[in-house]
Image (cartoon, rainbow, N blue to C red):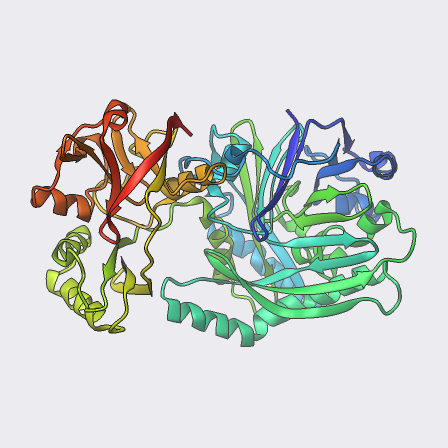
Length: 573
């Protein structure tokens, strides 16, 4: 099956193109005229085009360079009928796959050797900035669709994509717009200037403040803005090119990024060949001046970038289009995954800092650190139900002295008096983070569904409650995208009932409450512990038969207590 999925997590909109009528492919410079003619013809025929263009298309469009010899197509665009705007939920939500262990092809010493060469070019005045990149490699039996669905929640962005048109599959988590065309109006949004995020909210805010005033980030960004203004001005009406946004900061799970926006109005009758020749590749992934930076990149990097730093997107029948810069992008061939990283090097860059920035960009594929946390209610009178159980579990989980945790709980009891609060109390490293929000009741009975995916050792956190909740939260999102449901219940591989994504399950039979035994593999929740210790419930292995035969079903946690619930059906979703 050939397909292209374009996923905008910012707006929640997706476009899924399936079963290409034909695929427009250009592998050499000689193929390009026919490919551009085909693009214009198919658009005029009322067709949609979607796919990818390799970074080396820029070499092929510029006679100054030798014709590129690469394995990937320079252009690969499927010709489709209208896309589906609601792809199957499994394409977007899936259970976790094992972390991808990407290995850098360059050590820090390898990188610094090239970095020093770039510095010599900068000092000689050859260029002002060079985007130096290198690949990392991993192995996986997962499909492109599985890789995208498993990691999209860790890298939310506007330009997610999966391209499967033959040859290498492309999985992109790009946050960067290359260009958007609406009628004759063009918009570009270069992204340049990066800083890592910090777990401490105050330090993280300080990093953002520093970026707003930091000359290096602004200089990097401004160089590329000027380059793109120049590129766009060759295609647009005189005086129409503007910069409505400069040095805007965007925040992602692992980093902060600086962006700007450049706009213009195309001259009448401009063809796609002229647009791509004028813009490709995006200046944010080359440096400035563009042609000289591309020459230096070709000399210093190990081989072709192919899809990385190219572009992914679509062209609509009316000529509207949107293409991303293919950064944060995986190329998959026969179980080998390639993920490239890079950064813009300027004269005052520090080599080791740039190398660390590069590696930071691969962290979306690594499991986030496990931070232990407790969630509970703090009543208007300062009471925390089952406080001693919460304190003991938090202290035991990380080996923190009991008195230290008790002192933190006393602060919580006296904070924001007279308010009914939901409290999230998290420990990371040597510190604590407390988040307050208003306590709100849920409408009952809660609607329950059963996940079709069993809990495994890889997905369970059965000793302590941690922030690694991707599988649980992802399943609730996946099922909730298709049906109205409040909570998802999980079974284990033996089809024994385990737990919900945020609750413990209880069944009532003949006046007795039962809850799953720990041998089935579940988190020993505080509410569960309280009910067992006070004799209000018994633990036993529960099955689907027990759920069907129950007189009543309840779910609960320490935050909300015991809540009536009912299954929408007993099917696996």
